[in-house]
Length: 248
Image (cartoon, rainbow, N blue to C red; front, side):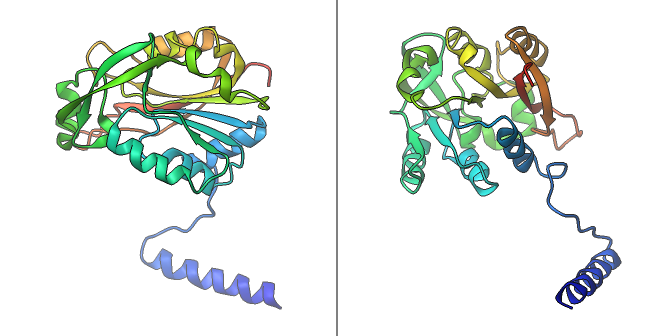
């Protein structure tokens, strides 16, 4: 009887929404990029996510919400974002935050441009295309921060993990991150990488170069997810691409 009543309630609920030209669908990997990613992580039995460009920890919060239960190690260079990230991680026993630094292609120091819209901050200079599509992303300050190759800092976090996943969200600096993990890239089973279709940051490598490079290292494209769209003309400027190794 409960099932019958539930069915009638859902049917009536959908009828109300349809009368308002709204559509109600079950949450699924087809409709939600975060759930799609977590389903993929489960399929490949990922037990460690390396979160490069963590900002305030939004990415980890999203995959936790949809059911990822494995370990996470986050890296973040911005001081304000790092403080919030570190605070958020304290509520999660399996979430570690590396001391504040940028990840790139050498060990040393670097200046990072701080954006008014925190997630748009980058080591690289921003293009006019980006500013036009998102005016609040303008740079407002610079911070000097340590920078390391992933190869230089990764080893202590790999203990007891078997299937590792690398997430790269570094606002145009993706190629440099890959340069700095040439020795450890073979240890990962999957990658999520932000790909720009147009020049959003000066001197950045665009989607074709990055896709070719990742595929040449033994990964296959698994999914493309929506990203940054220009609100003025509807052009897609950036997407997220998920890759897994060929041995599927």
